[in-house]
Length: 527
Image 1 (cartoon, rainbow, N blue to C red):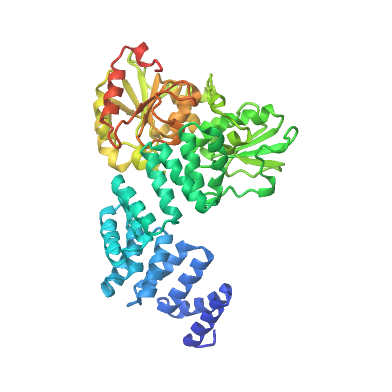
Image 2: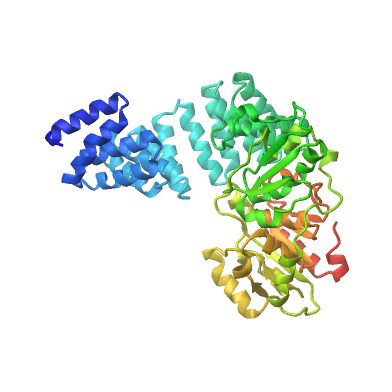
């Protein structure tokens, strides 16, 4: 670059405003070669990366920019928003704090900081900021709505609903408030009221994705499958999920598939794949040549799934296909009802070599029932704070006359001390180093008498294999466990032990312990 730095900055800004991002970058990068911590160049590159969607690199540049000195309120807001998009919430909060030190009542900074505190779990501080906003903007529907979301995170549901209702008094056509109010009511099992709120939202905006998807989940929860499956297709329109396959090749039941190659591809979690894979049989019966794509962790287990022409892992190249369908769209495509969900026999088998691997790993039988246990799932799952349990809450189970084997592939740091104590006592065996794939887990389950678990992929695996499985279901359970039932149409070998009070696992543990204390034959009976 022969131009001086001020000229280069002006040219970069002109290129940026014109949308010529590559040109802008060509002006800025040489500045950093000469002055690696040049604030304006770092800031410009951060904005460039953010515009391109590379928020990770944008945040890296912005961290360096923030070290260079004072920023205006607007610059601080921009930096904080980049940090939030990159999930660097602590950095975002630090930017908002600097802004509020300059302008304590800056509305955008108060709101942004409350939003960034939420994923950090600092709900009380977020609530304090939201309440300040309510004082500053008492007639803002959005401010009261945001306060409601924080109250919901704190489990203060009556106050949460009151906040949404106040927002609706101020702005009667505020669709997000109707949707969130419906979600709370559905979570409280007031499903008729919830559906009424979703209906109000859709009367205002028939294309609101949140109203459609949450109404779908509520209908599926109560067993209204025709409506539920149809609106569940809206899950692809909320921006949170994308299958990446051509829309013109999407098959949802309209075209004949006999003699056609249909790609069925996984979506969402491992448990979803294990639960819905059996509906591939419908395509096979319809004469389709089915190619099944599953998560790599499941490929060793599902590689020989009956009737399927080819099973691929997620990272394998795809062959040509005529149509494709997401796995969880199969019930909609085939218009399946409640009777179609009932499965009479196990639909998954584990290859004998995976069963045999455990013969030299497990100790000889002691005469006591051999029970696998899983108490937590993936921490990134949206409902994990409701469904997973601290191992310490399960301690009463380990005094039963049972041989417990941990089915946890990863034991959380917060559970490690408790797990180590139980293993030292000899009442829990850890076999995590031998669990390389779900085929290994399935082989282990074949050696067990019973599986006990929270709502994770492991309980779906046990149910699909036909192994007796006791599911610890949270008050806010996923729709697939329905309401109040102690059995499951999805898995005839399942028995549900449900929370009767939100957040209280003690009665569940008492019921499990009482069932474990029954004679072996009664203990394994499916209620």
